[in-house]
Length: 376
Image (tube, rainbow, N blue to C red; front, side, top):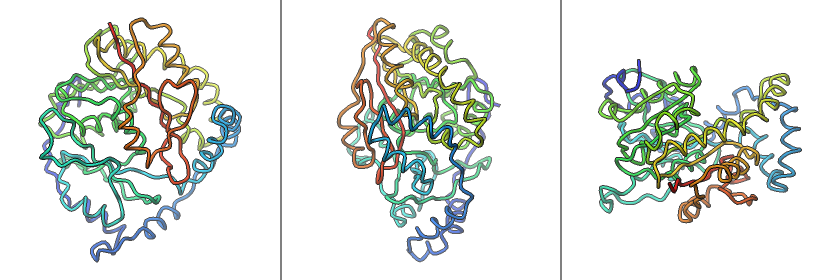
């Protein structure tokens, strides 16, 4: 198994055939060049629908109506309509992508980010992250794990790429993903650069195992020496490895709005809402640990998938007030501009980060992102 290195990854030989066979079972007319969005939509509608937890919804209504006003009203409509939820298709640059891009294009998928011709890149320029999105809530099949084969794509909420893009990892940098499971953001980091070290940590045992499976499914053996996978309390890593990293991502445990809204039963929903009040303290401790782990001049990105002010702006404000030698960095405007056609950036106060909220026509999110730099 994985210990501190990816020593258990076996030799992979990627092939598009498994994907195409699976894809064509769902899209029977693809070979004739026809877009079968209706077929996919019918499959989605045929699945049992989750039930909204009224206790959680009532709590969200009270909190977010106050914090977001009319923006919550429109976000609520999207969150309550499961058929409007979308998934981005993050391509795995280490896999054989033969025919895959053409298949996605024929289905009406487009690039989330502007693509730059490879010949114009320098060796140190960021690698263009390739994520395909669709204007409609189209679903494509997930790929099963097969030993000896690298998956070609990873399905995710496209807004979850914003923290990785904000981190802006460069070639050879030492990077810590403090709360890494299930592994999507670690994988996305590897799609944008080849770090000198990528330390993926996850404290929860089940999620740690999930992280291992994700890395095994997507990362080739030739990169195993660059990865370190640990099962530690993220709050202790800063004191264990002070100043060891150029960049740190804190995708903190949070009250995941999309997931919590569909809590299986009322009792579970009530339990989660009680636990919600304890999350900001944990989040602050994780962020402080990250700031200790990053070198002077290094950057920490803090992110959640909730719209809660207490878990977002308030956490960052508290850390800025209590942790000396730290400054707030704005997200780069060109990044926000490049994503504004697809993401709705909310107007929130205080302005200590960016919040993406789901809206009609721009259903990605929620996702909060804030950038901090350690000065000394």
